[in-house]
Amino acid sequence: EAQVTQNPRYLITVTGKKLTVTCSQNMNHEYMSWYRQDPGLGLRQIYYSMNVEVTDKGDVPEGYKVSRKEKRNFPLILESPSPNQTSLYFCASRDAGNTQYFGPGTRLTVL
Amino acid sequence: GNSVTQMEGPVTLSEEAFLTINCTYTATGYPSLFWYVQYPGEGLQLLLKATKADDKGSNKGFEATYRKETTSFHLEKGSVQVSDSAVYFCALRKNNAGNMLTFGGGTRLMVKP
Image (cartoon, rainbow over all chains, first blue to last red; front, side, top):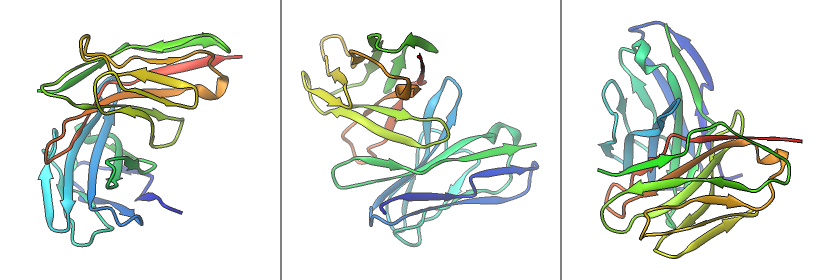
């Protein structure tokens, strides 16, 4: 089944404790991206990647890092999480027809 | 910069009522326009899209027409069902190298039996 998977789905952590949210797609898509969803703000793009080893900032990249060492994986890294990063995070990949496929989401709470 | 504005929710309707969710956008050039739907506990799914002016996107009884003169892409459905209860996001994408999606704030639709 073609899909985008994220782990973990839920995470509660404390300020300053580094964490990684994994994202994987099995559709051989070159383009992947991360979004955060906050009430009333819709989804805002954090980072995107056009291909392996090619990443770039989206609208709200501060406090986040990403890497793209393999085509299928695009982890999101929070080196020192803060409470304002409490949010719902979505990973997405895009096919050649420019249709985006979203993962199920990761709900992160930073205390 | 690009922006998308949607009507605030929640929108509460009875089953079989007519639905309109307004969406207007600000962008230079000719963006592609999308409606995504998010069911409870799930990620976003593409509902429909339109890539040029006067195009009509349609899917599952939903429709939206790309109106460049009014910079709008309103979502409509003639008869909603309880299963349509979800959050609906309007989005645009500029045809540039980044190809980022810019989303509206989302509109929650609740359909009562």
